[in-house]
Image 1 (cartoon, helix red, strand yellow):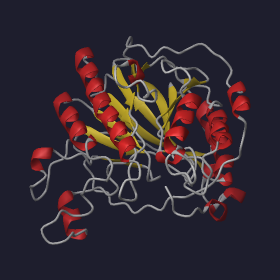
Image 2 (tube, rainbow, N blue to C red):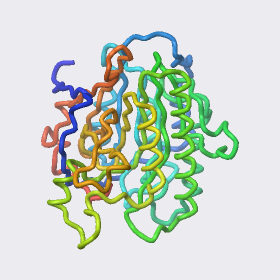
Image 3 (cartoon, one colour):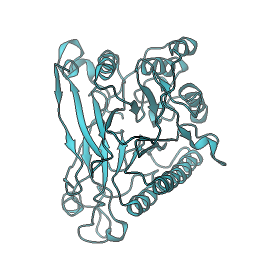
Image 4 (tube, rainbow, N blue to C red):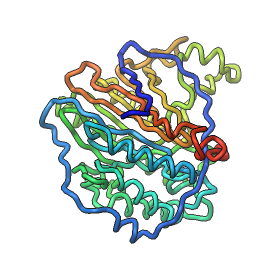
Length: 383
């Protein structure tokens, strides 16, 4: 499409680049809309099959951490139009959570219903994995009640996504012991396996909701194991995972990070320690990825900056001076508020790397472009 900046990042087993990031996120608010009206805006349409037949290449859209502010909402409308206009059409739109800003933006039914209606403008299937901003980081609310509402709104049929052309998926909620986890989904297209799992991290300790955190992590670990069991059984060419929480706030060469980001004597660099709230996920992910041995991607949100890197380290080498990365694992973090752009993921099961990444930068959404520029986009630093 004219007027946009197109680029691509190839996933290559040898491209373990060093990236150190300092991120300032933005906060905003939403505009209310009654739930009934939001649901009424979703026109019924045939379900799109994501079956395992076929081996051709295809694209899908990755977004997250948006829209937060009123200025974001204006730019998000352009993003929806941009995604819808892409040819060939994307197979689905995957949002990695945080549909609203931080604690100053209400977690009301009206705000969440407005976000739901906005997402239903996508002509392709819409897939969501929730973020902490969507139900946990809210003032004066009970997280479990907010999460229950979010699940009813965005996952009315656990076996089928929402969006203009819904996908048929397998939900973890169909498995014994995980009935509540309608948001954890899995589907296959052209011999490649895709899955979402719900995680959040803790910016403050102690954990105000330890039981909820434990439940989320138990479900996530079990689902990761299920997904990779399926991938091995089916002989999948690759696995694409998505979650909101970014396990690696700072990434790069461990050897360099230990020099630049020193901890207390005898302790690990604070840039390499595991994020609070995700402790069980790291070993489950490392074990599954190592055993699978084929390309694996984890898509995250959380920090709002587009990044492609290889931060998952081999557990047995963590004590080494320069721990070794799992080379067939790639993390892609998508744009987030105030950067209202999207990432086009190309999938080709015939390619040895399977996945490639293309940042779709919408020129009209560049900060400073028109009335929706930098001054209108500043938040309070919350993710």
